[in-house]
Length: 232
Image (cartoon, rainbow, N blue to C red; front, side, top):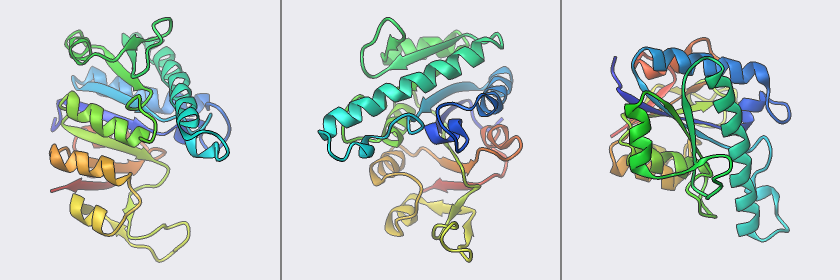
């Protein structure tokens, strides 16, 4: 196996499968692969988005800080849904949040997170960085750096990175490999620039792939060719 510890970033929209709230079939699709990866000996961490419930930018007439905190709370609902589904398959799981809410999850403490990996648990991080004005992509890049993940997996609704939006441009070309600088320079639609820069500075490879593809998550975790890989 190429990677010993992975971090998966999954958006709330992906968990909703284009509908509202949470799609049980999509949760099962994700969780079954996470459990198989875990059982193969790879340490697994997950960062959840919350866009299926609320995105900070939706609160256009609200105070930005308030709207972003609402988005952080939305990520907790997705994290708890994943935790419930994983534990029903017999795998111990811990949800850790950047905002304190001890009644439902543990606060994020790096050493405690590392202990969970030692005890063979899947760890789910919620609330992004815990700060407004930062995306959950930034939270994923930050946590990947902190736990020293070997790779950051970006599960998307599109199968790879393209030179432009394939939904708007049918002639958009698929990119199989790119550098961080190319992603930043060409403003490719992968993740925000803060996140890309953090991965570049910490030399964390990024693999973006289509979540709906058969076994794509497992293939990415095993280092098989899938989607697009971004490195130095």
